[in-house]
Amino acid sequence: MSENHIRGISTTLALLDKALCEFDDWAKGHEIRSVLYQVLNPLSEAQRLVIAAEVSEMKALLEEMRNTLHLEVTMRSVDKMIMSSSAVLWTSLSELEDGRLSRYGSVPPGLNEYLDPRVIALNRRLRSIADAVFGKESG
Image 1 (cartoon, one colour):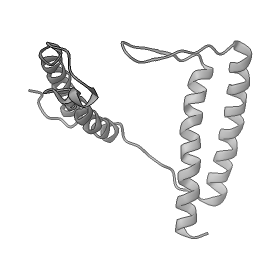
Image 2 (image 1 turned 60 degrees about the horizontal axis):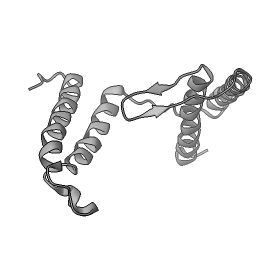
Image 3 (image 1 turned 135 degrees about the horizontal axis):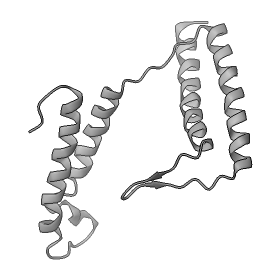
C-alpha cells in the first residue's frame, strides 16, 4: 500500500474509533448535564450491554487491522484541542457583542448592554483556560 492508502484508511478508521469511544462511554451510562448543554442517556441496560459488546469486538478488529496493515495512529493532544476549540469559540462569542445580533433582526433595548459585559467575561475566562494550557499567566 502507498502512504496515501495508509493515511486514508487510518484517518477513516480513527474517526470510527473516536465514535466508538463515545459509544463506550454511553454504554457505561455517561451523560452530560451542564448549564446550556445536555446529553441525556436513555439507553436500557440491555442496550448498553449490546453496545459495549459490539464496541469491544469492533475495537479488536480495528487493532488487528492496525497491526496487519501498519496503520498510523491518530494522536490528539489536549492542549492543542483546547487551543483550537478556544479559537473557534472566541470568534463565535465575539459575534454576540457590540450589537452584532442585529443580523437576526432588531435587537430589543438593553440586550446589548446586558450581553456585552457577560460575553467579554466569558471570552476572558476562555482565554484564561487557553493561557493555563500554554503556561502563560492569566490576566
